[in-house]
Length: 536
Image (cartoon, rainbow, N blue to C red; front, side, top):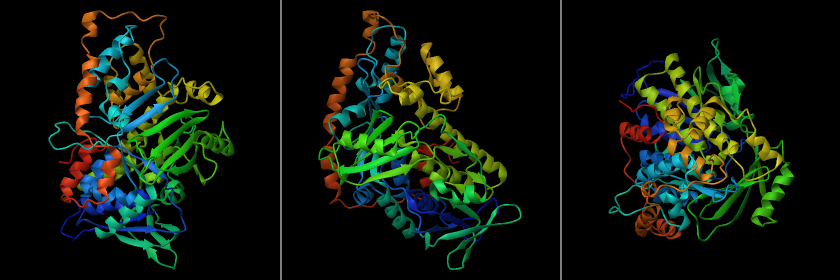
């Protein structure tokens, strides 16, 4: 395979994406847009293989994806029952007074100033000085969510508000399939019966039902937890995160839609895990993420039904395998989505990691080619992204204090979760130092920044336990005027419409947006995604 693909069509590469669903069709559409003229993309999927499609949350990375693909909110959101999301409320994760819940927001433009105030107060609070250091006082999107507002603002409003979405994963997969096929992606509804390999171990073809052998230059494994190409055929080693993150089950149940449509996910700590609440337009998705070591499936379903006060309705059991492949790119195969790895859904990073992997592959393919050194660099980036997300999720459990059960006692004392990276962050935090240098030096900020770590630690009240806090010097207390920050936020909120009203208005709006040129599309993805360097 040449390392210098040409856009003139003379050296177009043939890409085979095995597996549909949101991951497969997102990858297909992205390649069709950003690698236009350089590749021919075919998706091969089978209706014999069910997809894992429940109500899902996302991160602001998905907003960048749709912008890069030229797809407006008005076009895709009504089709996928999508609503807006401005952050996650964590309830019951701490028993520290005043910190029984906290909001992990997506960043607003002026939060960069407010978070400095939070960090200032938090540093003194760790020294035993009585200063307000709860993130809810400083985070704009927490107020947006509390008042059930839309994150959209008029052009006259000078600040950008980051937001993400809740959506029906199955509907999103169908929508992306239509868009990808409109962009020239070929679709084969066929079942892969066998994977042929050459003498070097690389994939030489796919044996499809009906006797056809399909060949390509590169194969993309989007076959979910089965990892048909990467693991079953190529035997790529798997790195399990089960010791650090023991949750391996989820029970999902849907209830009627919330008329108020809060623009947030809620994550509530329960006896042996946590429960999500995800508000879509047509329903509210509820789920219980737990560990089968500590709770049976039947007991989990009963606990979830008690929580949401519902007896009927189907409950869906999802078995999760938490970890990642040792290498996402092996020989001529790249694993994407659940096939490459999965970290439990606490911060809704699944689709973002899919987007990151596809983006980074496209960047390398265009700028550096496909030789083994490129694959090595790509694999390091993907592994770092997964590992940094794993550490942030694990830190939620290590710092929990809200329940005194066998499960939570295990989580708090779980030495397998306390990586050297997490340990370094905690040590810096309790010394009263800034944690950003530690996170940066250890490559832990690919996804969650120092701000996110600060929100989490402050939100749970992870401060040294002292008998009595010391009052601050008045000159110090005046440095962060919490009351004036609150008044400023309240005035800014006057620029927002109600969330439910905004979604209703979308149904009658015209969709469509200008589709950026391939280089601009990739620039948008790299600027807003988990990327290490810009496209030159």
